[in-house]
Length: 207
Length: 207
DNA sequence: GTCTATAAGTGGATAGAC
DNA sequence: GTCTATCCACTTATAGAC
Image 1 (cartoon, chains in turn purple, cyan, orange, yellow):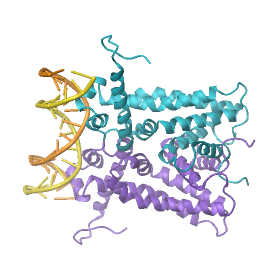
Image 2: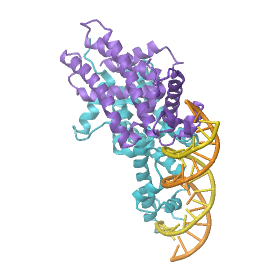
Image 3: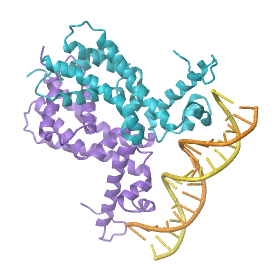
Image 4: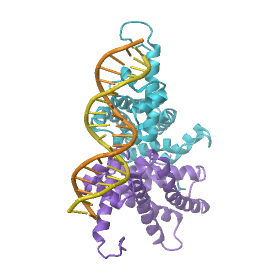
């Protein structure tokens, strides 16, 4: 991992560690109290520094927000791409989407503060921050659109529901699991299997 | 509707009208900016009064929050109960759940500011407000649990997924539609039908 | 790199006039 | 019922010491 020094010295590991701690604590506080309600004093306290010191690492509260938001999406997108790309060439669309669901849930639940903060506060942030973050979101949505398009082309996705509605409904449903998933009630693998079953085949016995 | 007079006069219609306007504007602002970020000055401006006047109708910002939260759930719960109770006695669980889904979506999307505010900010509000609101939420969740239990007893709900996971996943998915539903892209009835199909039978063609 | 001190502005809530 | 005026606590961000 490249260190980010300002004067060319080689002592910047502590540098990035504090910076990461600020981002982690900020995401946790944004998640639970909202963006506006979170003060930089609270973030600083949680990170073990004083409020003024934050400005050595970040230019503003909004810059912290931007990095927290991006991290949430990028962590999920990375996990999804890795799993989909690990599949053999001729995999069915069903297998690809299953891999994407597992990756999405894994990324979501293993970076809970970043992902939950993103989901919870995206609708409430200043327009400027929203604009800066929009492309990261759009790219990830495009990835899912391509996956589902492929499933539609292959005749695996149902044709009696719109592909856009399917994507929005499924992604929304998956995202919301971070609000209620309880790792103490069964294994992650079982959880993924049940969610995948619901998404593919629904909740009711066939008529 | 009983008017709420303080001195026994019969002129209180204006009274409740201003009160309702405050709640409506507050819900809209809570939805889009969050609870903490919304100032009572903004709420007052939007309602066409001055900030100090709010305290004639409410004791505090938190009291406004409490009423906004309750309204969101109660509007949805009412719509659901009405539709389920309108069904004939021996209706299948599938028909009952379909009626509940339609009621949930209708209530959700026709009181968008109250329901979206509830969904977005519930995780971010002061603990005291959360405690006061909890019972309203719990009662509605219990209603769904009973519906799905019945479906399970009748053998209509799948047995290979947990009923709790099914409820949490489905309710979460339905709730999130308020964040992306666009009434300009097709009728509400078509929308309900597609969502219901996904919930019952999933998104993929049967293997 | 982190600290203290402070500037400049905004928040919820209250008092009392009308 | 609504207004104006105000209290006092708290906010982001900056300046400069160490």
